Image 1 (cartoon, rainbow, N blue to C red):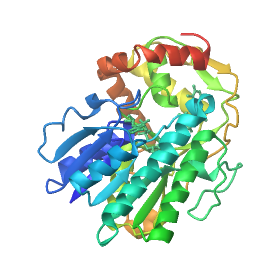
Image 2 (cartoon, protein in one colour; image 1 turned 135 degrees about the vertical axis):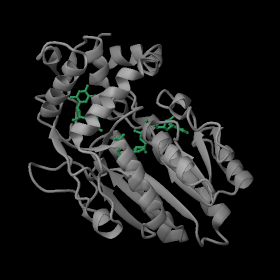
Image 3 (cartoon, rainbow, N blue to C red; image 1 turned 120 degrees about the vertical axis):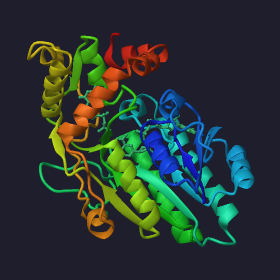
Image 4 (spheres, protein in one colour; image 1 turned 45 degrees about the vertical axis):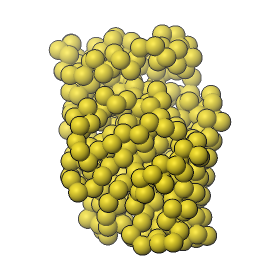
Length: 349
Ligand code: NAD
Ligand code: TYD
């Protein structure tokens, strides 16, 4: 089987590529990535010389290029992760989210439809999406697969739109697809713009920890390796033309999570208890900030037997250990443009 994985040099994509390359020696894995600020081939150093792996640099927004690689390589399946993925960036530059997340996805759908149209059997377009398409919850309730879409940020609106296009290609052209909507991921190789790696990096450097609003926002956190395993389950056993929610059964208020992170960082860095917490600074809230995300992952659990394997405390320790022992990776990704991003987003370096 020849599988095209898009966005494989990014955070989640690199974990998916590694899992598939190592586990399925008889598959050929093609990783298509533009290597934007979020993509980094360092993430895949350990698999880059495997004979069943090939990197293709390119842009999913370039339809001619996308059509040509589908013709050349005749992929049997696509696992589509390439995206602009950060809510704060979508607030400052919504159009780049429209381009990559919507147009880019439709380019891939068109290419897959064209190449597969005479024989859809055993083909699959697997679209990786987010729980943010469902909008926000109040203090109670969970997102299920039938919750109405109600996106609030340009990021989630662009992901919602791409989900609709995938479903529409299934209905209109019989394109075989699956969609998964996952909660917040954390773990190794996450770019330090998202909450957990940003705060780890700031604690290492004794920089302020900018908590949006009052910090009483809730997210459901899943260790990235468990997400990759869920993707493997759904890719091989998921029912075609269905959606699965993936979550960690693990809700945390931001401020509680940040305090736990601070404690673990103090331990690891041998700093006196309470040192990192002193760096917390409540800052202006994110516009349109969703109060709470929480996933009901019982469909994937009951029908495919998937569940998270790592507790949050364990996953957070593994994550901190990874960042502390990969300071070169962190230095590389936080040089250059990162400084500019940081000063625009947070008002100072
Ligand atoms: P990421 O930002 O770390 O990686 C995105 C990757 O896509 C990068 O390697 C980047 O170079 C590549 N890319 C961006 N634009 C491209 C283009 N035009 N052409 C080709 N490649 C391009 O993102 P992530 O956190 O790994 O998320 C991956 C997917 O999972 C996204 O679709 C995201 O919406 C979804 N998701 C993420 C989370 C999360 O918590 N991070 C949760 C649920 C779903
Ligand atoms: P983030 O990692 O950006 O993921 P998402 O917005 O997709 O859930 O943010 C997680 C939570 O942390 C969210 O409620 C916003 C909050 N947050 C902060 O308080 N400060 C920050 O600097 C960042 C990046 C996020």
